[in-house]
Amino acid sequence: MTSDDLLTIDQRLVEIISAATISSVSEVIEVMRSIEAELPNEDGLKWFNFLYLRVTESVRDNPPAVEWENPQFLERLAVVFAGLYFGAVVNRQRSSANVPKVWEVLFDARLNQRISRVQFALAGMNAHINRDLAIALLQTAEELGIALRDNSPEHRDFKRVNDILAVVSDQVKQTLATGIIGEIDQDLGRIDDIIAIWSVRNARDAAWIESKLLFASRNIPFFNDTVLAKLDLDFSIVSRALLLPVL
Image 1: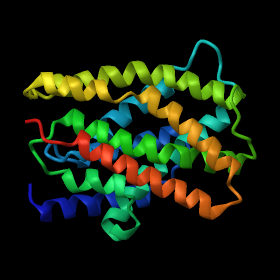
Image 2 (image 1 turned 90 degrees about the vertical axis):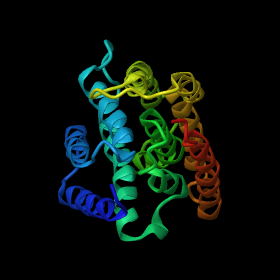
Image 3 (image 1 turned 45 degrees about the vertical axis):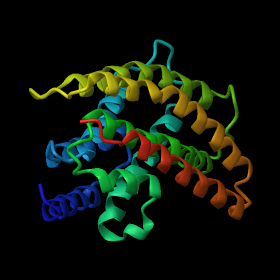
């Protein structure tokens, strides 16, 4: 696949995202399914989208035994959160200056065939959770007039989502590492080491803490901008480590 092919793909992704009306988890899933259908296997972005789609479907289809305490909050959070991913894809094609560094690292490496599928998936989750989730939590809380507090209904629901994601993300990571569609990654020992490095539960717990800081300082824009810039820089370094070629 050439850079011209990638440009054509990105233009199509922009069309898919721009044409969508996204106000529910089901609509988020439909957009991600359309993205998955558009991306070839040689494009590393496909494997982040693959993991993200599967975990989102799992959260929607496997609610906890105890009902959600604030389903409106979770629904809106999922929409806002996904919008940051979709926005990064659109901005990459339209104006790279508006793409966070942590996403640029992934986008720049998409065609490197020496990077395994699971590496691309984890680098995307690193960008999306460690950088984007705190922003999505803050925006959702402000929209709904909710304070971000530990042991609140929203926090308890957030933790329940963690439990679902921890199980399904580990399953999908192993699927990516051990092969799908008739392909098998090589040097599985090194890939297993990469999988062990990154935990969706730990990343989400950290994002909750960061969101509380941003919420408490939401009336101090300079401070919040500085925090977000540091998150972006720090986790772009993590993504570079996750994307070191292993094949």
